[in-house]
Image (cartoon, rainbow, N blue to C red; front, side):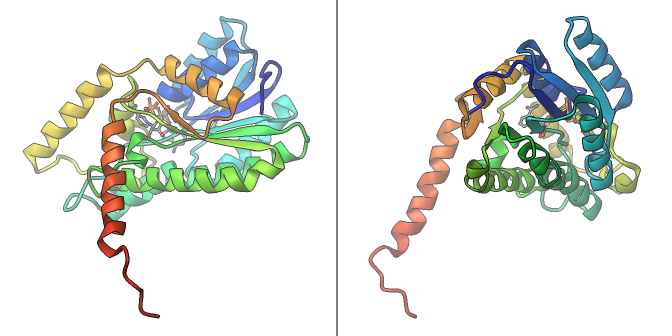
Length: 283
Ligand SMILES: NC(=O)c1ccc[n+]([C@@H]2O[C@H](COP(=O)([O-])OP(=O)(O)OC[C@H]3O[C@@H](n4cnc5c(N)ncnc54)[C@H](O)[C@@H]3O)[C@@H](O)[C@H]2O)c1
């Protein structure tokens, strides 16, 4: 367990905005050296400038984390700058992709690339870098409440369930290697997630339709936008993540709003078992 964070080094993706910036800030406030990584150069520069005004030891590296080679370069830059890394926060994410009837291949590829494959690669690339110094470390993967309950069958939920599955499995696999794993499952947080398409890589250009044909989907998006605009402070989330690293929490929730929905899902799963309880499966 990483009780004393001061002097350690962290690498945080999606750190130019929202939750990633909140996590980078909370870690920097605890004396952690932080390498901020993001696809958006200007946001990164602003974030670093703001943090340096607090005397934090921070630096930044631009990368599109949905490209493995760019994530590898960002890892190389982190080692070149700070020598070693203890904490990795795979947080960059996009709210991409529509539901049934509205999705397309580009939206699936974009969402899977940023929200899921970047997390897989973050573990693959940074795991050995944590292991090699022998001081232990911690990996935080940002999923969502949408990684626990699925309101629609879209790419976002699929990737977030994937991040939860990956994190649960890795927590068991990496414990003997002195690496803790936490999965962050936020509710509504006040960030720029609704405008994710601002950082859509050119190769996924078809992911965002010019204009949604369904008025209902527009209304739905407006409701989500309102919830996000009135959401929880990202720095509060960063402080929770810091506490989670210090105490090796498996799951990091931000509030209890969706707990009853998760209980309802478990009850549905239980009913599935009840349907066949007592039967002798034919072999
Ligand atoms: N805001 C919420 O209510 C909420 C709820 C649950 C989960 N989340 C998750 O939190 C994480 C952070 O999102 P946020 O809400 O802070 O949104 P945000 O848009 O404010 O921040 C996301 C950051 O990721 C960066 N990013 C996007 N694509 C990238 C790429 N290809 N390579 C590198 N960086 C990239 C963006 O530039 C941005 O700075 C995401 O994984 C999101 O799914 C957010």
